[in-house]
Length: 331
Ligand code: COI
Image (tube, rainbow, N blue to C red):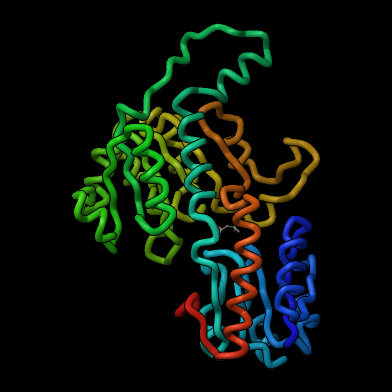
């Protein structure tokens, strides 16, 4: 059996090599992402392990299938960049890694919330200019606040535990209710109820056609004045122009964004200078003291990287050998 792994970073190599040695299975590591220009390298392999935020196009998926590759294992959780029709048409089986480290995402989200509440970005900038005064940057305390958690999957639940550690009250919205949380009575029936109660909104939902731009002008208008927005999930959940309007008006007091709707090709790229970043809206956000932008790094921990590589390779072997895996994604 031979597997090809695309988009392998240097920090993933030790985990890949260790897995290959332990299992005695050949894995070819390719630094490039899987696209029209690299797909031919997959010829002769039994399965492909991939990770990327740019689209897996119909052309690429058709080609993989024409090489006999019907086992595709993603090293990440999100599947919103895959052409579902091409997957079904070609009978390709896809797995993801649904829980490489929910903690990694929840920890960054909470870190950024605390930075927003304690105005650390503002103090960092003031100190850099020799201004060590306190006022007017007085903080809010999470202990006194209600956090509205949208989606209570593994990551949302980890985030809830962390917020609770700080003493926050939690309200949650999800179409699927977690039985434990249900017993605690934290679910509200509608997003409008969550918007009306939450001082902080923490997004943990996958991106679907239905929830694109769920935070739009209408949603922001229903929120409390001075709400904080946290998005470590998917950029498409927020209408960026509406967020900018809500920040300008003061409706939103601060935002922590680890994702951005136009991030593909921008995040995880070195442009050499701030001015060279080719996205004016993103620069508008980054310049604000009350907006914390990080380039999709919530997942980027050693634990997550190891699990992403090794879980995805294990799943790929199961697909190749048995035609099924517990992490199979249904399209
Ligand atoms: C995911 O797992 O879907 C992520 O968003 C993390 C990143 C590897 C893209």
